[in-house]
Image (cartoon, rainbow, N blue to C red; front, side, top):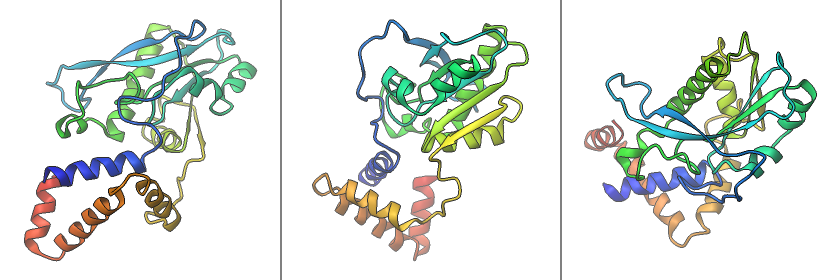
Length: 239
């Protein structure tokens, strides 16, 4: 059972992007964009859980003029470095054009944003799109208060997975954002894309035995779905 779950987590890492959980390539300290930290709840959906962690973010305010829009760059499934958010997309140019203040927020569990001390299965239950969306909503609400923004126009930016996050966020929190820019976000893609699966398969083959291990897991799932006992096993594993 442990091997089963570990293989699924490994598959998640391969499918979900170039970065690795909690780690990632970091560039050196930046004097122009110093690291800043925001206190986030570990579990936004549990009112009795009072645990918090520190989420890394950066501020780009050199173009800002009072009354300008507020930009939010959503970190992907990798470490959020100054190189990433200054060279990724046109949001910096837009900030310059529209005199916006920009915030770049690192995704929970990536880079230096460590919600838990380890990557156990129990810890990874807090790595969900829903929790990440609540992180962003909390950040916007608290930033409005801290900086005394009056009727701010927040525009969120993201690419690929983070692009999907922008569209989902605007749908779920239309009262918090004015617009969303989704770069290379597969919002209309079907569930099963042959080309995507082929690419994932090529990535899995870069590690000896990885493709075979994941393939075996899917064979086990297919076999389990054919029996009542197997279905109960899957229900127990995935709750």
